[in-house]
Length: 199
View 1 (tube, rainbow, N blue to C red):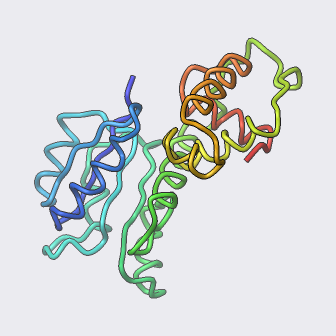
View 2 (view 1 turned 180 degrees about the vertical axis):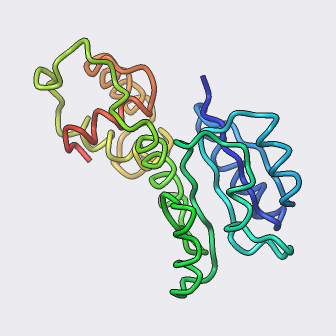
């Protein structure tokens, strides 16, 4: 099942870019709200796993005031986007206990790492299967390098370019990694990697 993400951003170009980047990963599906009213409606229509919200929405209600108005499970993490990192703004935002802040402009790698870690944190426990002891998993140096790059949501083509190997070789390594770890999704794999300090 795909992880459902709510993007709250008044700049439609930025919002669409975020949605496009997130949905390059097959496990993510995103909805966009450019107005607080839309965000509230979407929170009643869908069950979200994560919220990414700009703080400054150029509206009478900013992102900090909006989050408590949404219909969300208590465990749903919030990531705030902001162009400002002043202490007053951060202190106000901390009242709604966000998982993290992303200061604009941010890199794609920062986005995916923050999103993946927020989703893992929201589970409150590791989500990988427990049928096999992780101590019995034997991974090579190249496989560990690929896991680290996967945790940054790099594509097979990007990994191939960075490691100077072919995309087909990356694909083979990925299949072997999932087989050896007995994980089925990237989230499960990252969870296992975090527990074992592979990343």
